[in-house]
Image (cartoon, rainbow, N blue to C red; front, side, top):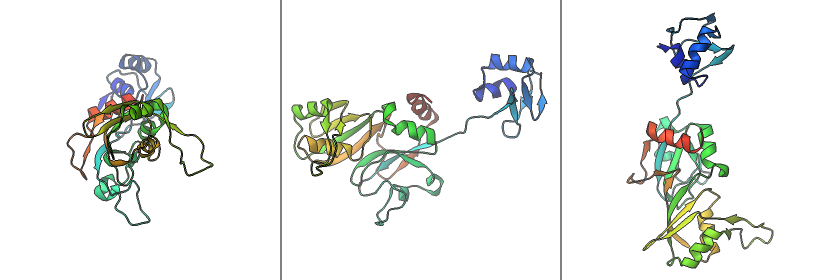
Amino acid sequence: MMRINKYISLCGAASRRAADTLVEEGRVEVNGETIHDLGHQVNEFADDVFVDGKKISLPKKTRAIMFHKPPGCVCTKDDPQGRRTVYDYLPPGYQSFKYVGRLDLQSRGLLLFTDDGELLHRLTHPSFEVPRSYFVWTNRPLSENAAQKLVDGVDIRDPEDPNAEEEIAYATDVYLENDYVELWLVEGKNREIRRMMRAVGYEIRDLKRVSYCNLQLGDLPAGEFRELTANEMNKLRQAVHL
């Protein structure tokens, strides 16, 4: 049970102070009856509340998990080739969750899953420019010139397809470490990093996503998952303006 003004506020219909005004003006109904008592208590699970004739309700509580994808499993629900999928690592309670973006067969690292369709859409749509970072090990040390080309933008169309149209991909940042490259992107095209590296003359030996929307993979073991905290969920939502 909770006071009517708190319920209206949590539903996003008005602030608590404005909700009091709505009640005083007779614009709030609970189970078909207009109420005027500012201290009226509502059962958020059983009562039907209307403001100006429109039913209001609490936002659905949604969840997300972070999974450390190992190499050799595919981002799909069912694989026609019979390969192991990312869902094979998840218990029944998470089988309805959708993965956020993809990692290809041999790539590893951070993969988010959620049951919130709008959050998934915003986390993957290019217009929201959600940052994600990767550690990339190449067949030889990446040169500073190649790193600059990745930032300036490279054409990742298939060089063997004469009809392929120009497709430019950019890295927002590239950091040259001792034995790997840290690469930052704000979109996730199909096999984008492998195609970008190939465009500047390099092949990838290993690829690991280490962050997504400022969430860090940390020391989560390969093949394991954890639920995001309420604070982490709030940060995700704020990052994509939900």
